[in-house]
Amino acid sequence: MRPAALLVAVFLLCTNAPARTAQAAARIYAIGDIHGSIDAFKSILRSTGLADANGTWTGGRSQLIQTGDYTDRGEGTRAVLDLLMALEPQAKSAGGRAFALLGNHEVMNLIGETRDVTRDIFATFADSNSEKRRNEAWEDYAKLAAAKTEKGEPVPTVYAQTREAWLTTHPPGYVEYKDALSAKGKYGQWLRGKPIVTMVDGNIFMHAGIPPASAPAKLDDLNDQIRDEIKRLDQFLDRLISLKLATRDFSLSEILQVASAEIGLANARIAAAKAEGKEPDRGKLNIPLLMEAQEIMKVDGWLAIQPEGALWYRGLSTEKDDPAGGPFAALLTKYGAKRFVTGHTPQAGRSITMRFGGRALLIDTGMLTSVYKGRASALEIDGNKLTALYEDGRVTLATTP
Image (tube, rainbow, N blue to C red; front, side, top):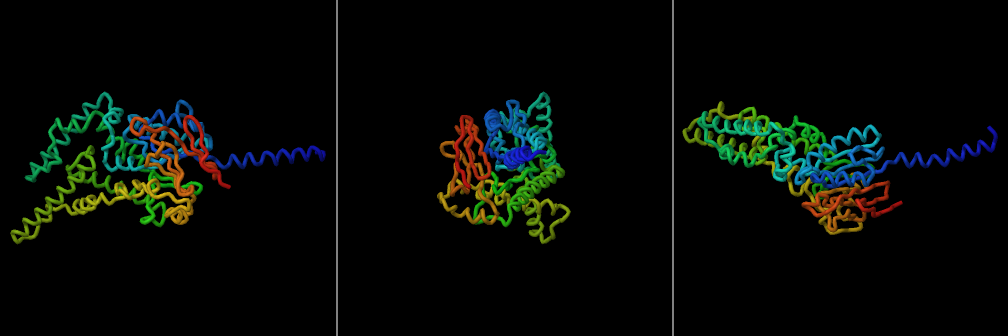
């Protein structure tokens, strides 16, 4: 090769190198609360270039991280679940990543709290056999009271619903929904494999936030705790079903009523034996059940439900702003992170908000317009360049060296 040709070749190699380096640092896109708003979710995926009109991954090596609350309230909940599940393998095949975290609403569903699941959402799980399944489920429920009567035990009110009342609270699709979100269900298995917090490139992604006063030693401690709580509830419900004390369709409230009733029954038997100067008949006391029931009755203090816990905390949005980071600066240092990226609290103006000197990015912009009157959005993280993306444009939030 002649000297001139050599210089040209070296020049081309040098000019191509930065392009390869830039490509290696894939952008991250974070999307907040969806709440079943399938059309808005698809729209923002198109706006970011992460998916096409059919919902097929087009984001290449980019990363999509959804920060929870994609279920409940919106009729498109099932469609959102299906899309998130489909994007995961597609993104992986392209060298990227599509990842959803658990929010408080997903966890509520996994432990049996369905207060924000609308009849329209249940209806999307119904099919031509739903009425048959619903009647069979009612018959299974009715047998619980009969079993108590046969054993000469009092029938707690949790078993006392009339058929009409039970059918009202268990609309078409309810049985299928509960089955699909159970530990062995299509969506239940997928959701139980998700964490509530993850850190990527110094960004802590989670649904709500971490109260500084009760911050765990490690972020994964939060994931371990929530998995343990969900597993404990699953195991307790399985025990109740095996003892003919509940059906798979029981809500969290009903499970707690059963736990309370069984503890009350055991206490009554112990008290009656003592009144007669006798030892309680241990054959009539299911000790493992009672021990589990006592633990389940403490559910109000669980991370899954605790109002100031990591799934519900609103301090990143409500605490007085401080450019120096306030109590969150030390917390980020503790975890070796740069910033929190969270949803959970719809932001004023329905725009992505930066607080605490860029240490908190709040990305819930009320995507479900029928409830929150907001809009779809995504946070683009390109190194230290932060950009809010909306269906109608982009807003630069920060560009830091």
